[in-house]
Amino acid sequence: MATESTTTSAASSAMDITEIMKYLPHRYPFLLVDRVLELVPNERIVALKNITMNEPQFPGHFPNHPVMPGVLMIEALAQTAGLLAFKSGGNEISPNSVVYFVGIDGARFKRPVVPGDQLRMEASVLRVTRGIWKFAVKGTVDGQTACEAELMCTLKEL
Image 1 (spheres, rainbow, N blue to C red):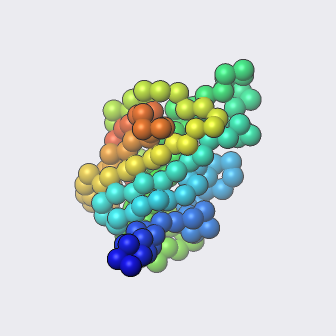
Image 2 (tube, one colour):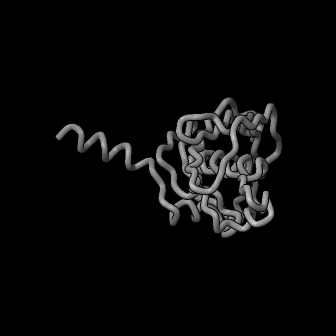
Image 3 (cartoon, rainbow, N blue to C red):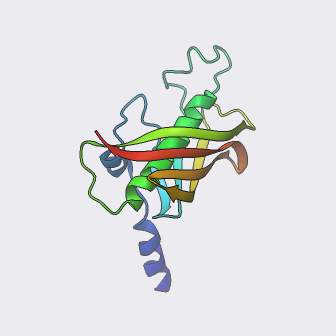
């Protein structure tokens, strides 16, 4: 029965879409995190984005060859990092709390992400200085790197 307690503690860090929506103000079509698999406050997070053909960007990017725009992959990674920042803050989230994306360094795109793919998003805290969080982020599909960058975010009250 030791595996049951291990499973319970691992599951406690997971988040479904209902809990994600308590932390992120984004809604369809701009909520880009479907599930959190792992979250260790002040350390790292692993989340998923399921890519489907009925998303609004695909009729125009690119017709007859749908590819998830790189800017949306970065946004999905920023939302993932924002969840980690919120959950690491230790404070109650107010309706006026928001995480602003304030910078990006070293963004690289290594493979296209297409409908039917599942983007696995990982963010790790590099440092927190004067309210600015810096994260190493990476998106993979089937174990292959799709994109990576360093992102900076800050938590603010509106």
